[in-house]
Structure formats: structure tokens, C-alpha cells
Length: 399
Image (tube, rainbow, N blue to C red; front, side):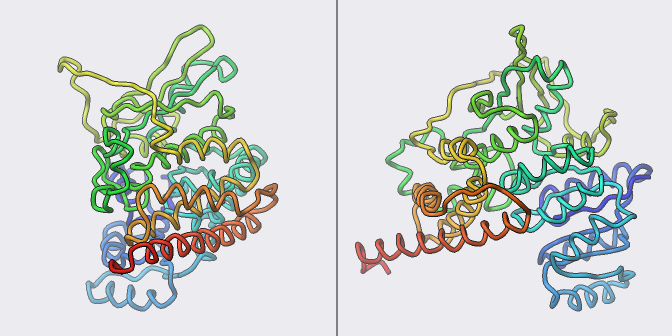
């Protein structure tokens, strides 16, 4: 029986992970659930999965959660709060497997410490590698930790690389749906509203990652992750737009063979793959009907229309903390866009200006990376305020 600690239990990945556990109760049990502020959903999860520990982000939410559980007649587990508690549960002796699915840098330190203890990791948190890739992968190597990517593209690449020797792989191809604006003329992006950007054509995800998919920033983050996970230089990682979202990744080998990973768009497949690797267990996901006629499209992304993908390649090539700044600035810019403070193209403009203002430095510790993250957010907020002020001056009647 594997005991799982789930970081981000109330999010989309967390809920899919719990569904996999639900289907495999003879193999997995939940040791700890870690969530943010969705207390009602967390209470329901505690009732069903009976974890020994539950962790929330804020101390003041602990008594609220306890009251919800008591009112429902549910046994109250050990309730904790804050970042230190995240690390306590990921490094606990009772934890065999950590599913890292918290959005943002909040789960990075807890994931890093679990890696240092050799816990098996299912990684669905982009920021862990985008912000601290060199430190994290050095720890994976030093402590011989199994780190299995859960993102559909990286999970697909992981599967494709099992088909041959790593030294024979010459290119990694990641696919992108292209988002809701792949056919929108560049000049019309200035008029895009948040509700349009949140209408993803394929996946149901949280607000930030959905906007990141619309700007192709999410694919840029995946390029950075892929470089760290599979030891590819950026010149050997290619992005292609594939609107059908059925082929998740491809690996080209030196003999010209290309191995592709194909499956339905259901995150339970890569989640179960990570939990059961190297076994392939039966997963509760739809199967493709190969007798049905279908068309698959592949074409190059438009880096002029979607400059954030270009900035991701450049930040990875710069090295050091540049990718940490990239991530922090993007999160701030996306939040500003969702508040209607900047335009859709303004997201990339804020990120690029923040990268220009925050110098990259060698990554030396998780603490230092988190400090760069804080500094970058401060600078990005300043850049956002400057742009908002300029808009007010240009159109005072609107504000």
C-alpha cells in the first residue's frame, strides 16, 4: 500500500489524482491532503479519504475547517497550516509518494525537501523546475529520487524516451493546442477580454494556467521543464501547434524514427502512470476509436503573435534565476490582465520589461530563488502600475 501526500488536493490535478486513488483503493491510501482556501471541497475530501493530516494555507482557516468537519460528523484529522506544514507532510515517514500539484512557488520548498529524502515524486507543479530547475535536478541526481512528470506533454515524453536510449534521442517535440486565439489576427489581440482567454478549447484548468495557454507561456514553461527533466538543450526542444491535443509529445531518434505518445485528453492517465510506474495499470480513461476517421494538424507557433514562448527560450538560455523572474512576472501580469488592468498583449510586455530590470544571478539555494521570486513580483507590479497609469492618462474618461 502506497501512502500518498497530495499537494493541491482541491485543484483540477488534485481532484483527478483522488479519482485515480478512488479507483485503486487496494493500492493507494491518502496520508495527507494539502489545499488552499477551498475549505468546503477539502472537507468533502477528508470525509471520503480519511487522511491522517490535512493542511491549509492560512492559520485562521484551521478552526473554520474543524467546524465544518464536526458539523458533518466527520472525524477531524491532524489540522495544520502554512508552508512549514507543507514540508512536514511531504517529508513525513508515513509519506511514500508526493503528488506536487500546487500552483505557484508555494509547493517548491516542500517538493525539494521531499526529493532530498528520496520520496517518489509525481510532478505537476511547473514552478518547481521553472524557478529552481538546476537545484531540483541536482538533488534528484544526488539522492537518486524518482521524479515522474505528470503534465501530459512531459509524461508523454517520458513514455517516448522509454522506446530507446537517451543518448540516441536527437529532438523532443512538445505539442500545443494553440489556445483560443491561434487563428485570431495579431492586431485583434489588443481587444481580447479575460472571459475570452479563459475559454480554452481543450482542457478545463485554473484561471492562470488557462491564460498562460492562451499566450503560449504555458508551453514556454514546458520547454524549460523539458530541458531540466530530460537533459535537452533548448535547440533540441521544439514546439508545434496541434489543435486536436491527441499527440502529447514526440521524440526523434538519430535513425530518423519518431516515437509519439497518443491518448485521450484525460489527466487521469498521466497521473496513474506516475503513481504506478513502471507498471502500466488499467486506467479509467476513454480509449481512442481508431476506426473513426480523423485529421491531425501540426504547424509552427507564431512567435511574433505569441512572444512569451520566445522569452521562455531566451530565459532558459540565459540561465540562473532568469526563469524564476519569467515565472514571477508572468503570474503578476496574468493577475493584472484578469483584473482588466492591462491588455492581453500587455502580459508579454510586462514580463519582458521585468526581465530587463531584474538581473539574472546563479541559483545557489531554494531560499535565494524564493527571494528572487519576491523581488521579481515587486518589479512586475511596479511595471504594471506604470502601464495602468499610462492608460489612465491616455483615456481618463474610462477610469
